[in-house]
Length: 263
Image (cartoon, rainbow, N blue to C red; front, side):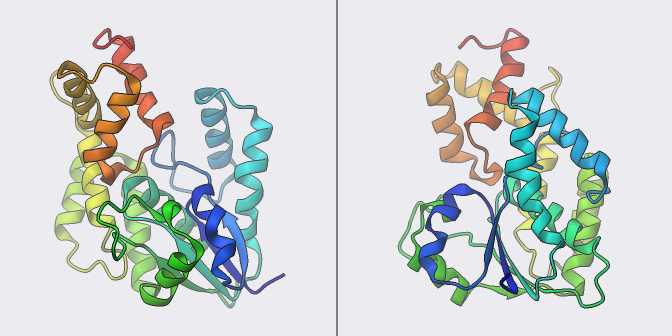
């Protein structure tokens, strides 16, 4: 086994990653902690049991798929690596997953913890409409590794632990107060706008709709009447959420159930 582990934010990044030539094992993180039930102790069996049940039911997938695609790779975090590189982006989808990974790493009781590094691009030179690491080739991913990789220290893990506790609590007022009171973000500066986007998702209007539902309803009412049109409008303007079509569908289904849209 290599003594280096690369935790990648999804299969799109994993496709090009072998072309970087970087030494180390790969762990493809396929969970979506930005959706569904989350509780504070991510190291507990109950946490993963709840996740398995929710994902299996929500996306109509066999439990065995979750065990193979998600739980199997996550086990690598228990191995004694000397160095772990976390490849996650600025959006809420990635930042929620990053908080989960850091909570898992914090829960380990190894006497000699690994050196943990973060590669978190918000843009890429020459790409005016950068949509994420999944569109980069091996050479471009290597460039990120060489230029923006930063080591996470104790203050970063402390911030992440506070953020994770508040994230799972789902209390918009408490999270907003913590963000306002937090003046130092260390290497986790993308966390602030992602959590602010989460707050907009927690709060609802008089109709009981959160920000995402309001946005999708407004888009529908202004002429985006197919799923593909709604996806595209959302992706063009709401990159901070980092949601794919399956995640957007969760909100569209609720709007349909309320009788507000017909697709």
